[in-house]
Image (cartoon, rainbow, N blue to C red; front, side, top):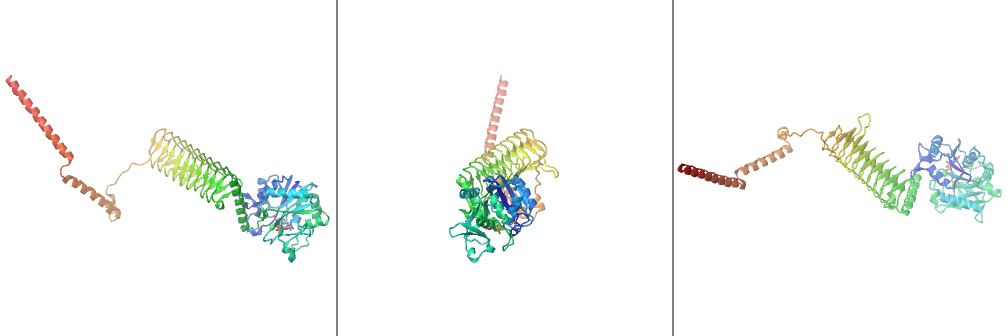
Length: 521
Ligand code: UD1
Ligand code: CA
């Protein structure tokens, strides 16, 4: 294939969009990108894209996705024949005098490289000067019709606006994809006029011209007519998106990925998923996301440009630009942002946000926390509602937490701050200074109870009533204790006292005896 020409100069008026129609996306790739991708499989030596409306925007996009392609500006839309002619006459193509050229439109994203390869095979094995890709449609409305002769050979293509009533009944249509011999196409285009209902140079007229000059023209019909769907409005964009989604999901399932609900699972073409990954309903996987085997994603989870390691689980979460390690668990309701790196076995739980931070092997941030610009070591636990206070209103600062650290609930770690290995912080502390290894950082005021405050200052409230009741209960139970019959304890005391009294008395007696005997002696 010497050359590919992609027509993309159209206004795309029905999209009602500020941006070019061919730059709208399906499965993470622009419509034009899809066409280029399919076309690539024929490895054309050169590729020329005809641009018009939104030309600078389209050019910029092409520089990113297909830097080797060239563009030709069609400043006036004089029809598809005119567009191809200026492409062939441009500096990028004028030296090409033999071989084949494929012509496509920039708004048919479902066309596959396999179909184009079969079209080429058909074209070459028939020795045709032109081959048209056609489709049999239930509703051919709006398309150019394929007119065949008595023997079933392609005769011409008639635009709907130029159709006779009987031609209008034909349900075989022109997809707008063709392969031509370059030299024959040049000759044919030179003979085309704009004497038709739309006053345009129709590329489709090249078929009639070639056939009339004795050249062989051929038609090849697609198996799956959805492949040739073109996009003109937002409904067609949504329809093609859904068809592409099914195509992507089917391919993944064939490769061993479990997708529980393909209808609610949206995966970009660029995403890589290993076999034995399970994807639960309502999940969206975008960009450069990579998921390793055994991982479980969803339900209702979005992953953008992120990596998920083997056997990791991500539930009901939103993740962008993060790396989730082997066996890690994320969610439900977790927000992982750019630069979050979770090592093996890390757990990050409900209502936790992590940004630009690394969390070491086996560490946990289970509940209601913000971890921003931090490095956390291994096997540490970050208590509920901890905040890494990383922003002083002007600049962001980093914090370091060592291995086996226990951050008490509701700790504010005011960055920059370092918590040493094995250190603790007391719940509710505002930590502004480093805590050395093994130390307990306490940074909170001592508790003081103002007794009876509620009864005095909130006397009429239910709280005061409850407190008064609790107090009176306490005092009556004290009184009851004091009026009760002597307790066991007091009984024992009495017995003991008696015993000592007896002993004392005995000692006294003895000493008296001794005294007496002394006197005797
Ligand atoms: C064209 C075909 C029709 C076919 C249909 C398939 C012609 C005359 N008709 O009709 O047989 O069934 O496609 O979708 O070719 N473009 C330019 N410059 C122009 C005109 C068009 O770049 O001057 C581009 C458009 O941006 C579009 C493509 O060519 O990408 C097709 O043009 P469009 O106006 O959509 O042609 P249709 O009338 O749909
Ligand atoms: Ca069209």
